[in-house]
Length: 390
Image (cartoon, rainbow, N blue to C red; front, side, top):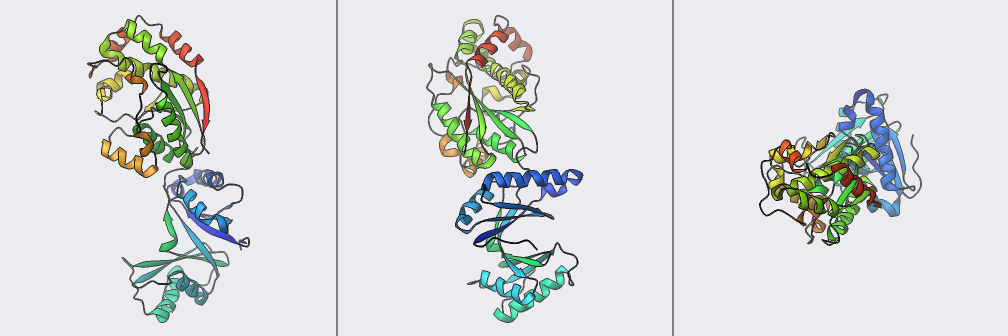
């Protein structure tokens, strides 16, 4: 039997995708348990049990714990639960207390981690349900019930909660399960959503932001930091590499055709980000590109820009339209920051008529008069690194 500290709130956490991991399942479970500890802090007690995770937090931190649990990747759902002895009358009484004020149909769903108990899950459901019906007269409805009572039997006790206490989590995989990625963060709407989506798949984001100060303001950098502060509530603190790009842009302006400028800027960004990724031992770069959204994001131009690096470039938003991206940005909490005015680095010396269908060979010829490696080295030498997040 698992003991509970006095004046503690008890939560049970369930996961779905992790449960399908076969031989690697234990590793993912332990990683999720650690992410929960990171999110909840030292006062929380996190116990990895059979197929679920039990969490105790001080009673005065219950609401804060709910908010934090809802942002931990890997959590399918969680519930505030109450303990009861393995006694159908006691369980039904607790369920009635949790359903106070309810009117309408209900159902009972039971699960047994302890298969040695002298009853099956369906038998427990019928016994508990019969007692609730006897006390209230509520109808039982197995599909589409107005309320559901959940009973989880673990060892010699039961955890009871209802659909009122059950909260969905973000799902996905715990951060760190899929390695590390370097996200090109512009301060706009798209890149925070791309980073969030990669974190949901278990990748830990490291960020790189390019600016053209003093030719443009540092508004985009301030916005990027604020966006990462919000994202850190989901994936934890992160490193932000801040890279000046103005020197690269001035050389491109002086020595390359105007129509290719934006694409050449982006090729340099990818090269610099690839070098950062090598130092971070990251496995991929991440861009907020969406197909056809702007001139640089045609199939031809994305291919021509990506050809500048050997590293995998991931584009989590590539098939989304702007309306979908905005809705997701609003849901994760970055949208209001992203729409603040800014001058991003690509607005400096921007071409009037950008190329929409370039090839790698055309961009290589456009770079022929540039000392590419020296420009990359110079930008990296002027780079600074910041730590952002709670």
